[in-house]
Structure formats: structure tokens, C-alpha cells
Length: 112
Image 1 (cartoon, rainbow, N blue to C red):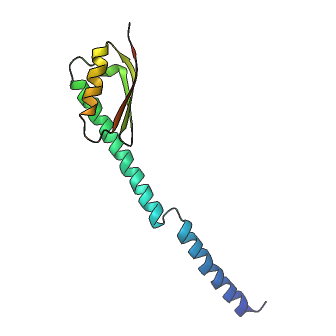
Image 2: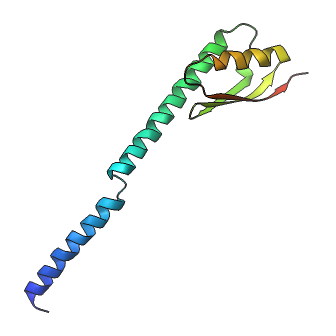
Image 3: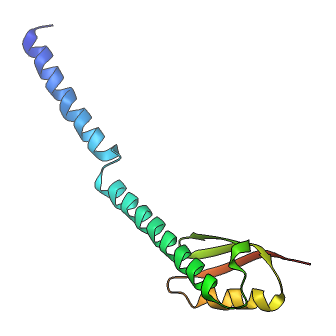
């Protein structure tokens, strides 16, 4: 193969591969926007969880030390142990008042 043909072939491959990489790259615009949204959702979830923890710690009649709290895109999951049905109701009411909470799923056991 002549050197000029090799050069043209190489240049053609570079253009084709750069187009493929720009469309499928982890850093393409659509993927970058997706990653930014995931990061923002995760940071929001962390902030919501911290706000819930702080609020529950300051609320009388709630033993927040025996609760685990997880937030996923604004949906709050609480697990652990409670002392009474009244405490369960108070936990749900308190969490629902916090901004950006979409739903509360309480999966707790009552201490006996």
C-alpha cells in the first residue's frame, strides 16, 4: 500500500472513531447531564436525611438513636425500633413536614 493511501486511511479512521467516541463517551452532553442529575439527587438525599436525623433528635418522645434512615430521590425509608404506636405516628408526621420529602415508608418493630 502506498504511503499516501495509508495516510488517508489513517485520517479516515481517526475521523470515524472520534465521531463514535463523541457519541458514546461517558462525558457526552447527555451522559454528563445524567451524571449531574444523579449527583444532585444524591446530594439532596443526603441533605434530606441529615435534616430528618436532626429534626427527630430534637423532637420529644422520639428515640431517634434506634432508627436507621435512608432517602432515595426524596422517598424516605425508616427502619429500627420504636416504643409505641404514638411514637410511630409522630415519626411519620415529623418526617412528612420536611421539605422535599415525597413519601415515608416506616418499617419498624415495636420494643416489648
